[in-house]
Image 1 (cartoon, rainbow, N blue to C red):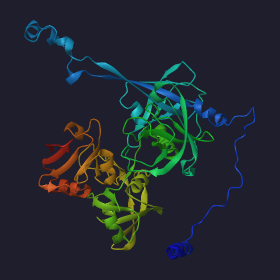
Image 2 (image 1 turned 120 degrees about the vertical axis):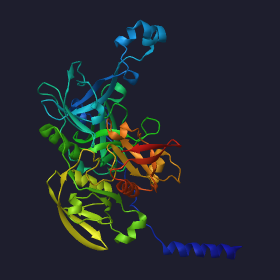
Image 3 (image 1 turned 180 degrees about the vertical axis):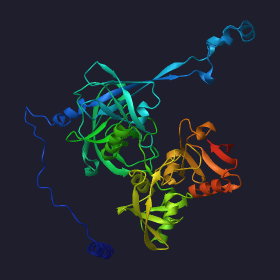
Length: 474
């Protein structure tokens, strides 16, 4: 028995000597906040000015009755109509109603310009703004909207409004203390505290252009459009969304970085619209299968090019890996989309790419993105169907939409209101399985199938909640 214990002990000592870990120095002392009887630990002075510049936004939208039926139509008073359908028919038809919603906004100038989310004010007939600790209400004018970044600027009339100063979101680091200020659930101005949980988050499927700050500061319904400020009270983000399966806060909130928001706000105030550069390519990330073919390089892989587009004219081809734009590193497809989206039409850019394991460069002149382009022209979500946003189905998408592991096709992640895609009946969550005789496996096969039948009516097989039906695209 003693011999056996000796052998085991010797074996343990051998492994212990073969491997070591780095250890932190021993704790010498612990530092507590000042606990004097007259002192409290507080961020009040840090955020008191920022709080004054965050407003409550309420909107009103008139919603028509079902099927557009107008109960005031003279036909309803016709005696023969009443005899056939009954006197009570007109009373059961849903009347027009006023739909109200709540959100938040950030005053960015003393003359009343307010930055908020586009989805807070989109489609509203009336936008009402109220300042904290003030019962006065202002009717706001919409200055400009950018649905692709989900940002909008509105304005209230007056002067010497309190406003929030901008900080640079590029200076943020994971672990920085931040505060979310807004109007959750319509209860009035509220401040929650957290940290920066992650930076440069994309692929969430919320906006066309995603470069989110992730935070665990509580963000709830009504916080949209409110301020994310640092411990100085400087604006570092516009609170936009939460990731939640129940609708409640689970500590995963997203904010649009202040640097992006500032540029878009200034452009909307100056021009009223956002014009973005366009390359004319569809792209995807470098998958594990492709990584070895590109020497383990990061970037965005071209999976299709539009004829006569800037990319095609510059000689870019399918399977080229774009690694830089004007020497700015491109890490993935979302990165390329955001970089190109920061340029304007007619800007010239130098593209660095890898083809057949050789690095080359090309210079191209960007054009204005067509109205049906849902990306910067980098096209990861772009489709040939106006108003339809698509995504390849990967593990992240399967988890988010609770899809079976063997689900194939392309997923509809967005349908623009009033677009052709909405008109023919597409909904978010639909899965396109087949176009004519072409099985659809990814974005590339979708684009190829659409190209093969360009100019012709196409039959699409679509799955919705396990039910398969057809859609005809003309």
